Length: 441
Image (cartoon, rainbow, N blue to C red; front, side, top):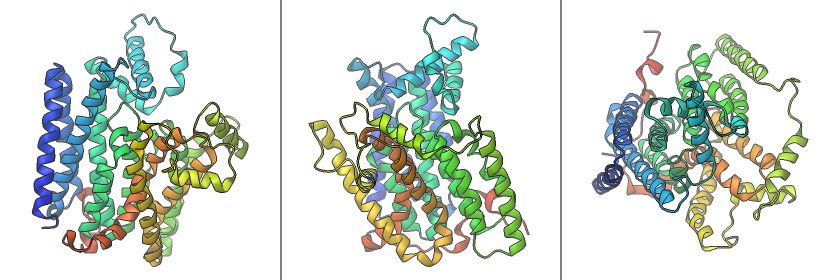
């Protein structure tokens, strides 16, 4: 048994508590459509976890995913109803309201119904998440709670991917559970994956790409290469800089995959390069030019205009500190800002632990290449384009889970006997049978 009995009991109690809160709230709101959707999404999330996780690891991962799911369900319904009570229409950030408004407008347009509002200002939102929300609204009406519960389920499924990705990279059950727990309960990740925002879908797609790269490293098969680009395609309208980053990371990671013959390496790298170039050319600006650095400077300056937490005009060294460490412990100006303080302590520890992991495992750098490139590249883009702490705090969620995966081995070694270690043989990379089955058999 990997997790101690008291932890399993605590997780079970948490599932009962948060699940009960979510069900009671939905029944109290008479939102039976959302209640049915919650049950369906829970079944799908657990089925996904079962397909991804080796049989010996399922009990602990089931509990972790179940707790992550019910926690996010509870946060989604409480925040939604709290926002309604506060007169904010069930929304929090402003973006979540815009997504819902635009999606329902599109449903009305597609049905040929008259639309009173001018939705031209919403066109910049058009993309993968709006398409998904529009499809849901077309089925169940403008019930935004259903979309929030779907995001919660994606957030829970993301935890399952993190567990298996960590297991493949570090071959230790304890490390995989710690990585999953860090992602499952990191405060801002819980919030962003419980609202009507695109963050949950984006993180899920990113994790799928990195997981497929880990599968490829264990058993290189040429058909895995085009499969990696399937989740990259919808990323362009979710986070364009991540779309570009993944398109570059895939061929680099394939080219550096260890223990491969030169002809096989050359062939799969050529496939990846061709597909990456094709995607980048198809989604390039009309002039086909690479975005100049001055565009990032202008975007960063625009973000800082009127923001009380602007750092757009700071020197490079100061901006690096902001991107990595802001909001600083001494920066809160109001009581609400203190909410981020505990999270930042966790983040600082994760950064340090991730750096130690990379240093300690420098000899196996090829295995960690996708994670290192993604985390480092995303932080570099944030350094170029971010101009205020408010937007940085949310956008950094794209990189936080993957830093925590890198941090997990160091944290596991520090925890010592709290969890019983269970080393996993290299053949443990057998989550989804179709992805890892030896085709040479």
